Amino acid sequence: MANKKILASEITAEKIYYDRRNFLKKIGFASAAIGFSPLLSFANMSQAKKIPHDIKDSLTSFKDVTSYNNFYEFGLQKSSPKAHAHKMKIDPWSVDISGHIETNKTYALEDLVKLASLEERVYRLRCVEGWSMVIPWIGFSLSVLLKKLALTSRAKYIIFETLFRPDEMEGQKSRVLDWPYLEALRIDEAMHPLTLLCFGVYGKVLPNQNGAPVRLIIPWKYGFKSIKSIVKIKFVESMPKTTWALSNPNEYGFYANVNPNVDHPRWTQATERRIGDSILAKRRKTEFLNGYAEEVGYLYSGLDLKKNF
Image 1 (cartoon, rainbow, N blue to C red):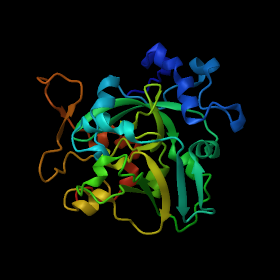
Image 2 (cartoon, helix red, strand yellow; image 1 turned 135 degrees about the vertical axis):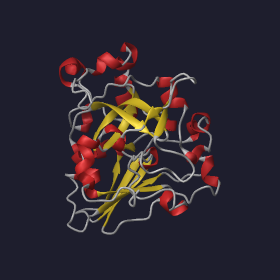
Image 3 (cartoon, rainbow, N blue to C red; image 1 turned 180 degrees about the vertical axis):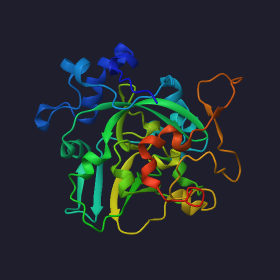
């Protein structure tokens, strides 16, 4: 794991880098009327906006990141989201937050970020799902938001829900899953600084096929845990049932931590294919907790990660 911190401008094409102001306008963060420091400060970007976590791997291309996706709401093929996700309307957007917190409320997207009172960061993270990518996500640690929501002592888990709009998300007309899509974390997992709410990628607003306008990223878990296009967040006391665990509990457990020693019943998880590699390239060895064991391993101390997959 590399400790070197790299400037956002060093990993992003200059045009994309400065087009971020359009990104801000798109989701309403740039207006002075909002009354908080904008996500981005172009005047001091070279000084302040560094990657808080970095890895050695080279970045996956923007083309691959935005055209090879799992987003079953738009179809089962990796190419389906890019082909169909443009139908999803993301403006306006709000997120309903409820459960064991001080105040239940529906937040407009810009108000959600205002509540967090934060600055943008770029995270260069490895994401894995049998195949893997290295992506410069733009977002902030979910913990920043959770600390402002005044959780009660009964809040043990957090549930996320994806938009359900079959007229715009044609994959939801199928019965391949029970819609809307639900995912969940323990509160301590959600509070880890590498659990992110993301709004952009490669200096651009998230494309619809990547989970616009707000999604979760949990880099030490398999990709299906990183829920997209979030419209609801709820805090509960008991471990909830999640979409894939309900669909096929023998294949998809609650934790979904990357563990090369636990094979999926239908394929090995000991190796992975890096998107962008030559078709002749040798598959890579999958790292335990996707290479983030040093940062997150303590969360699972004493937990049997073969039984609790």
